[in-house]
Length: 246
Image (cartoon, rainbow, N blue to C red; front, side, top):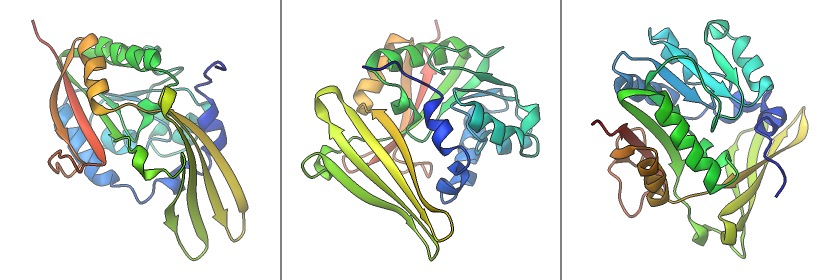
């Protein structure tokens, strides 16, 4: 396996990232995270271009971040208020931010950007180290669905407009729980952009065990930010872990 480069994803997508997430429920996500923080400080792992961090900071919360991509952080810095959010550049499974936090946040499948189970275990431990007593670690991720693939491959439409289309092509490798994806961004003026990304996916039960190893326990699990109940049919999850108080 080649050495993991935490800056690779952002290097490819930083200038387009905001366009790829503009249809996300950002306002609702921010509201839920603010409720969970309950006035305390927030650390976002994979802070990126500040989709969540900036409105959280604007609400009056102290916000900090860790990200592996200088390009993504540069986009954050160029936005109003972005220069006031402290960000540590580095691998968020290991890098440390100053202080302790009521809430550590890792959204939009970003836990799967880490290349191995060992790296994901380290990420849980790193999140736990940053939490104040009683603090929470929130993960948003999709639920693996190998049945959605035909002969190990799948193509889906992420968005489609009159002058812009975003597709995703993926190949599944169940033996090591990895998925290799390339987003295809098509625009009338800009032509074609290919945005590769790799994932090491994990089922919620595996993430729960990682949490337990880090001294965290599952407090709540929803299917989405609307707090839709978690069921057999759920295709994504928002999992909230809490420190185990002595």
